[in-house]
Amino acid sequence: MDIVIYAAGEIHSDWRVALRDHLQAAGVDAELVGPQEDHDRSDDIGEQILGKQPNPLYRDLQGARVNTLRTRVLMQRADLAVAYFGPKYKQWNTASDAGFALASGLPLVMVRSQEHVHALKELDALATLTVETIEQAAQAIAYIFE
Image (cartoon, rainbow, N blue to C red; front, side, top):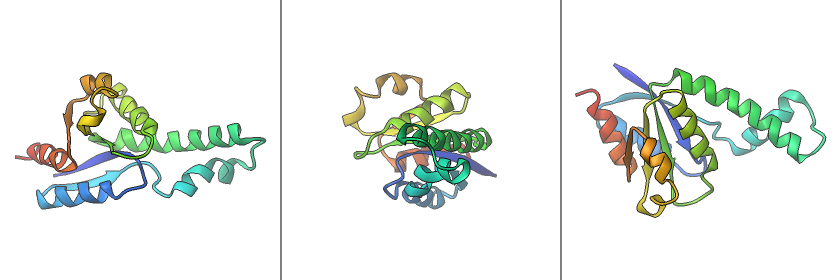
């Protein structure tokens, strides 16, 4: 049996590769889906589809709408979500995706270090499972198939 995982989190590091590697090592056949990982493509998509916008506010809004379409479709196809709150970069998109997963009834595995305990306490309380490392997330997912 395979599993579709929505991998919510920043797009600047290789954490998805690490998750995929840990899952493969545990014998889990997983398809990872998630946000557009090409940052420029993600930022430009609204204008690429809808044309030049009158100012940066509308440029960002239209891009966000197209990206939200992607997120909702892919998340609704997923079996669970993994939300990675890494040590760097702003985490607003990750929190938004985690909240949408929870509101949609999608099981959520949240990965966050001790430094984010206070900032993420409410989300932590709602998550299906919270772990501190990507390897722990992979181990928990592998447990589903035992």
